[in-house]
Each structure stands twice: as structure tokens, then as C-alpha cells.
Length: 462
Image (cartoon, rainbow, N blue to C red; front, top):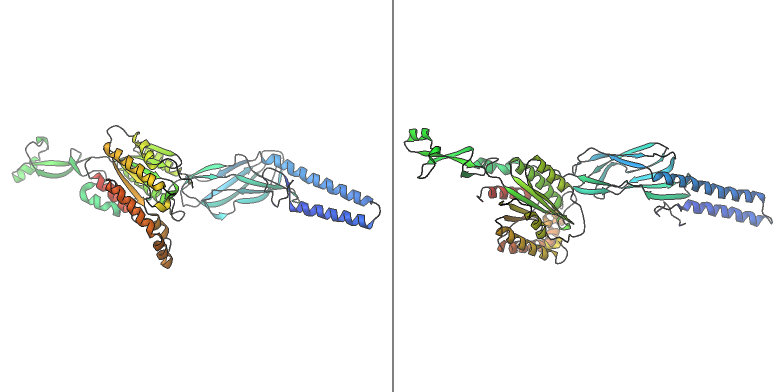
């Protein structure tokens, strides 16, 4: 067996440095006795037998604990739902269902790497009694998306620590979903459209509807049913009533969840900011009666078919909550992800596709952005042929990175990354020349520009 300080060799009982020291001490004593005596004393034989018996007994004790540790049950108790950025307390319950006590156990709960330990310790050293329960708790600050508790690691030792055993308790791994913190739409961004008679649920398009909009003079061919007779009696001229036309917006949100969107400080990355805004925007639009769908492009493509109502809001937020943080650039192109969503649209639907992805080449592997832009050009042409509309919302990574910097540091960073910003604008211009709308944004302009675009688009008859 190999020596180890803490039993780094998984699922194998190993000897520790204490065992090495113990054997060295026994060997030294035996050597001294042999040197000082011509015959082997009886006390030496007794001492050697006792030492061997003690070592065997310690290993036996550890072996019984090893058998029991594989039957231990782990449960993590916390208040749901878990919202990103909000500290939550996690209570860990360890149950030993066997009749064997587990001596000198060091238990370490391996929480997700992107979480921050705020209070307490995620480990405990204790003896777990037979048919007994052990509890400990600690607080974490979570990050958006789908994460994994990598299991409960257990390091077992005998009373003197001369043997050690390390393993991960079976079935102690757990998938953990963190919901985005919805970013509500401030009224200051909506006030302009509300006061412009667009209202909270109307399009501002003249037509047959339920809500009175204005009076205008009668023209030949107007429906006589809408003549306002009171106004005619007052002015002597016929006027007709004009009503607001109810209009639902059909919106498909396409979010790139690849590593290209993970630039920025943890908790304030482009992906996290986009997720917060999108969930707030969806909540706002669905309350207005609009239809919303979602596409997530990561290692796999996730499509939520277009729908409306509270159930649709829940489906979309749940999908965003399952975004996986991966450093592997996806093989599926963004244009191909949009193509999957087209096939799910109801017939005769004219939708707006809003695609969130960065156009900064510094955020991509070599040549990857050119491939993405080509796929976007191709799919946007198809959208246009099907009478759909598309807009690309492109965050600039440099603006998300620099906002946590100050003074000279910020100036030097901008100077060193100006090339990436210029390249992103060139890619945006390439798309614009092909008739594709591109909105380049930073953290402070993402929301107002997005809301302005959506409301202006709503006011255009399709």
C-alpha cells in the first residue's frame, strides 16, 4: 500500500505518515534491544506481537467503518426556489442506517465551484453513531443556471490515524438549479409610450377594437355605424369614432449561452445580465397578452415553443435557470438554433426574432465568429422570406469588464481592447449592409435600447 497524509488514493485503505513513524519507532526499539543483548529477550517478542496485533485491530476498525460509509444517506435541505445572488442556508443531513458506528469521519460537501461560501463551513469532523444522524449547515451565494454538488467526500481514519480511507459517498451528487433574479422594467422606460396613447396593452394602430381612440371627420365609404351623432349635432358635420386596434406581439428570444457570452465579472457577466433582463421582459410582455418563445444555444439547443400566460412565463424562466456553464464552445451554430425555432412557429405567424450574442472576435476561438456570422446571414435571409423580422442584440464584452475598474486601470484596459470594439462594429456593419438590424449595447444601455426597440416595433403594422 502507498503512503498518504490524508488518504488521497480514492477507495483504497492506505497507510499514513503516522503509520510510517509508528513502524520506525518499533524498528528502532527492536534494533536497540538486539544490539544490547546477545539473545532475543522475551519482552521483545511480546512487544512485537503487541504492535502487530494493535496495527491489525486498527485496520479492522477502519474496515468496518468503510463498509458502513457506502450505505450512508445524504440529504440537502434548503428553501426553494433559489434565486441568484441571494444568500441561502443549506442544511446537510447525514444518516447512518447501519448497526456499525463510523469513527473519526471527515465529511466535506463539495458545493458548486461558482458558488461562494458566505457563512459556516462545508465540512465537519465527527463520529457518526450506529443508526444515528449528523447535521451541519452553511450559507452560500449562488450563481444563475444549472450546477452540480459534486458529492460528499468522506475521509475515514482509525483512532490513532495510522490508516486512512477516502471516498465519495454514493448518490451524494445532486443537480442544483438557480433561478435568475428578474430585472423589472422601470416605469421611466415605459412612460413615453404610455403617454403617447399606446397604453399598456394596445398597439396604437387604428382599427376595429374595444377602446375609443379619437374622432375624425367622416369620409365617403366609412361605416355609418361609427358615426358620432352627438358630435354631428354639436358641429353640424359628421364625425366617426376611431378605436385602438388590439395587437399581440409574437417574439422569439434567442440566447447564446456559449463561453462567448460569459465575459465580465462573475455575477455581472453578459449572460447573467441578459438572463435577468429577458426574464423581466418576458414577464412584462406576457402580462400584456403577447406571445413569447425561447431558444437557448449551448452544448445542446433548447426550444420553448411560443405561448403566453403564466404557465409560459414559468416554462421560460425554468429553461433559463437550467443554463449550463461550460467552457466548451458549442458545435451547433447560432443560425441552426434559430432554424429549429422556425419549425415550431404557428402557421401564418409573423414573429420578431431577437438574437442575443456578442460580435466581438476576442470572445471566440479563432475563426468561430466568421462561421457564426455566415450562419446568421443565411438564417436572417430565410426569416425575411417567411415575413419574419430579426434583430441582433450584441453586448460588448469590454464594457462589461471595464465597469468594475477605476481610474488608470480602466483607461489602460480600454486602450488595450479598443481593437476588439472596432472589430465588433465592423461585423455589425457587415450584418447591417445585408438588411439585418444590429443593436450594440453595454450594461447601462441594454435595457433602455431593448425596450425602445420592442415598443417601436409594436407600433409598426405587420
